[in-house]
Amino acid sequence: MVAMTNLNLPERTVRQQMASAIAIVVQVSRLSDGSRKVMSISEITGMEEGTISMHEIFYFERKGIGPDGRVLGFFQPTRIRPKFLEQIRTFGIVLPGRMFEQTLEVN
Figure (cartoon, rainbow, N blue to C red):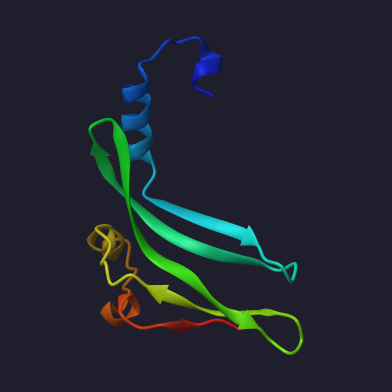
């Protein structure tokens, strides 16, 4: 979209703008049973040598297919505590620390 504006901004500048504007990336996929699931939640942590760096916080681990044909699995934490925790606390949102350490069951 930036290229369509004809502003001719350097790619590095565009990436820096993106890295500073976006905090979390949520990846959603359609699974083989037709359902949609959040597959990954990652935090953008900044830039390293022109590349946007991210840390995955949670990912969906598939465990198989249930008797009803539905995909079974769990949300697994990567045990990385996101940097944005303090920021969201200022908005009154308090997330328990164990949330980033325990497997989260999905139905």
